[in-house]
Image 1 (cartoon, one colour):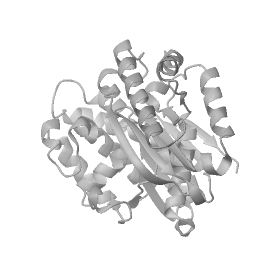
Image 2 (cartoon, rainbow, N blue to C red):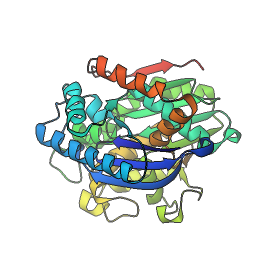
Image 3 (tube, rainbow, N blue to C red):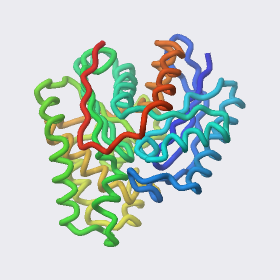
Image 4 (cartoon, helix red, strand yellow):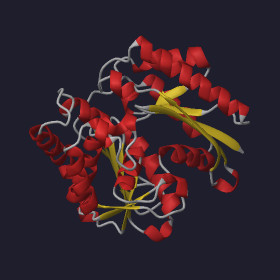
Length: 336
């Protein structure tokens, strides 16, 4: 069975086409299209028509590519920037009308659940009780569990793009120390309850996913991506703390010259480092494994393991649910 997933993030539209025989999604083709929503849309603001045009063009191109590679219509979803937009439903309907693709959004808690599933499958059962951190553009997802799915998840408005807009986009580059301190206080405050739960659970293993963590891992000495996904990569809290301090001293143009930091993400790399380091410190995690599987693989795994009906239900709920109100913390206890 050949399936495809389209992931509309705050910076990029990504396509993965994979063969899923035996329940393991093995990629046969990947592609991406720049979107840069985070540069033009503040979290919680409407998505302007020009951005909808680019979004629809990228989704249409991804759909054509998936068909070219022999996959059925893609499982297409958009993450926090679209999810939080007041005109979210209009955007989803416009994309469907222009492309024929049923683009949907999902709650941050479901994103965390799917990402945890991917990390569990990648890390294996030997990892034991597993904690997960995932920094996106608009939100931070945290999960913990002992089985296939997490025992609890949390979705927090602590994405690297969101916090860059709110704390580090005041015109000074590098930003003043006071802004970085205020950012760290915000992260500490909103992570307090979730971090206490992680410390109480005492996970045996911790995994970090997302492009932000991958770039921070490379900055702190992990092997580059060209060495392949099976090279073990770790990120140590002490190294990340030193990297965050270094990023705070540099303008975005100089951060982009550092190992692992791409030019499109240089501006938000400092916020990502602050979130990552603070989360690891508050949860008591000294080391996290950089996991190459994340939400896209989680969507494919759930589709293979639970059948297509669950995705139809996700899309139906996205169509019926009103745009979410911004909240400081959302925690969901899950039953297996």
